[in-house]
Image (cartoon, rainbow, N blue to C red; front, side):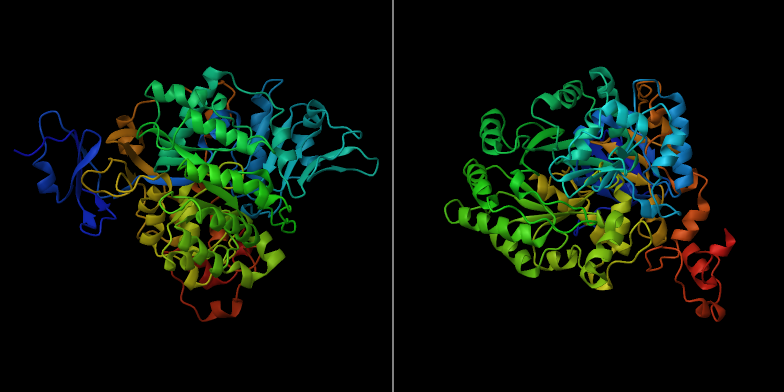
Length: 621
């Protein structure tokens, strides 16, 4: 007799990523795992009287997405307090959102926009001025974090954080001042973002019960985008175990809707070895279960080895003591069989770190540890091959989609063509995975990353990569699913729609494999399953997932605006058209070949082709 399924999802276009069975119509689930994937008729043989049967409506179904680098634990504690400009396509609309939030935010609370956007995504191609912020919020503190490079504070925020003409600049940061020496409200990473994050940390925090609510809403938000697993990369001001109490309580209460593998991030400069020595006695890699488990060390291993991804300033040189600080930590981790991840933007940092790894490898072999570098935007072929020889991997993120214009301005378009060289990494045979690095720089939206991997374009419309450094859609999807299981030491457990694997699935709003390139970033999930259980539903599937309690507190920006702002929902369709041009100039709008439009036919079914055939469409707006 066939096994009876708990759930059957049928009438779908299922991309399984299983080479032996690449496409399916239906998926049967039992006990949280995939029982069968294949033809509908065969799946229905597993139906019983209690089987839940869901019609996918002919939609594309994919394995649940896995983000190999996000700060979901820290982000969840603050999500309900933050106004998100992720996806907003005009500064005018962003400021309208801010003014509405100022009107409902009670003292002493702040209005915070904490990363996830770039000025280049705005039609105006600029940030708000300090004068505009002060006019919008004369009394309510406003803090806006832009990427890794700056924060904007209005006068009210300057007053509450206590910055005056007598406040000294911290190491690696600058409090910009006017002619009289008074702070203007602009804080700059020069190149260290500590001043940005330490200033943000001065703001009010949510009480524990609200943090639980906030974390649940953030998890539901990434579920809405098809994410079912995250590897949490730790973060500054996120100390273990104190700042993990909320996520661990949610885990105990059965309220996690995302699988989390967490790395431990050192918090104490010059005391990093003590941190990891102590943690190695408290927890072991793999400790936990399929929903919540330890994943090892990093992304900060030692502070002297941390470079900065602020492309508006020159590359920082790591100090001479980097190797001496890093070696004992790597030796401790290798001896205790702890996987690690190391933040490294520049090849120069990677090269020096690899010197240390190779030295330790002679005494304690590293192969089998699933260690890896994060970011690696300027890595050279030589260092890719060194990583391969040591059995390491590279996790890439779509930071260039947010900062590509700055990179090109500083290093040139030719250098940007391989920032990072993803195709070369894959050709070297090393494990490569994809993620977002959300929430303080890039957005947590995985479809922005998938769009970047496929098109090579920034959110501002700048084309960065030649065809040789782009991925086809299936290869890009694989980096967001099956490939990422290596980075959490969970191969064959998830990432495919395959019998025996965890039943994590996403039913998509639009077909990733046929939708136009410009619309990839707008895809969401209309139904997300975690272990075969609905954790998000929209439209026809809305009633399948349980409702969450309303966002807390009652003035939360999430109540009014939600999270990622879809272009069609912000009344900014004209900016979607402008971005669709795909022009390779920094402005993202001008620079078209007008003469070519005279001889072109006008394809009305595709926005990009339509406006491209007409030449520059700015006159229309």
